[in-house]
Length: 345
Image (cartoon, rainbow, N blue to C red):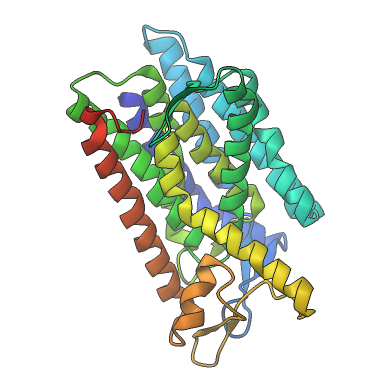
């Protein structure tokens, strides 16, 4: 249990204390991006994901060190696989930030980050599907399900962002939901936390600490933007936590809005191709600060499309609250259902 506390505290402090210097340094080096959803298009430091990635990795390394030198058990190889996957996702994000890959390449590359989790056969090969029943996937689980699950979560996390505080807010909610599940599970089962669950909680805690501290600087009006070097490791970390803890059902519920966002984006691209209309990537700010969008083609465009008084700040707050209700509600319902055999496992 102490590993969860250590991970969240270290990651939080690293980001919170280092970020002012990082912001100043990035501006001095000319590493700035345009905050597109504000009048005047102000320049903001970009690349804050560097320190988020560093904080997640550093906190997990400290936990591994404590387990090695202070614990009575050997380090679980699964958490090492998660650590490498997060690092690889960060490297892919760094390359994307600098080389600006084509959309097809962006979608496919995160598959590489799943390799450490796949080759270490992380996760349980047995999945209980409602109505269908329990299915033993065997070798297909690490070779097919894990890569597809990680790739989807990384890609969808990268796509569901772009407004001040949205990525950090959603990451905070999702990671805290996983940590809450791990901590509350013994109360409902009467059993000690398994090593796989503890590993999941530790990885999620590292993400929670980093995301929560980053939110301090990334919330509206943002002082720094994450970049792909931050968004991809965020997706890899939450994916790794869900796979480590065998939380397939929780993953389906938590990432339902992300899947909807992906489908809306596909519909938008099809609509653009069929009609010949100009593709627009961002919403446009009106004189009063409200957002104008071309249609409800992403989750963060739905509210501005139907409510003309929707500002960036209000839009992000509503989306994060919605995600919190969904994630925490899922944790509660699945924990309550656990004694009847329809919980997360």
